[in-house]
Amino acid sequence: MIIITKIMVFLLVFACLNVISNFIDFIAAFINSERLQKPLWKKLMLGVSISYIITIIATGFQLF
Image (cartoon, rainbow, N blue to C red; front, side, top):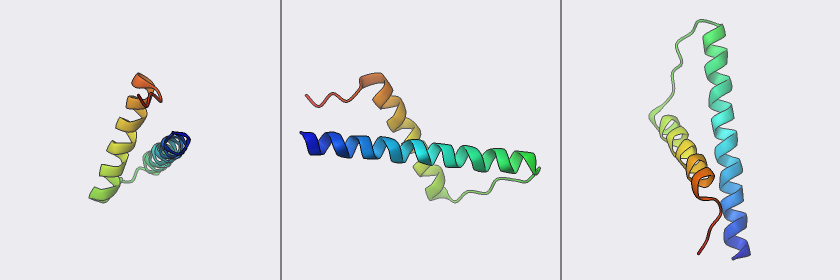
């Protein structure tokens, strides 16, 4: 159980860092008036990260 919780916390931190990184890229592109070009896999990872964060907020770290 402890290992699963540690993995879930690691994934939550990874997801938060991914969202923050994409947000900073968006702000930088907006300030420089550039078009933000992201590959499909980065967009997919951003979507997965956001959905994981929302799921954890809604349900918490309930294992059983």
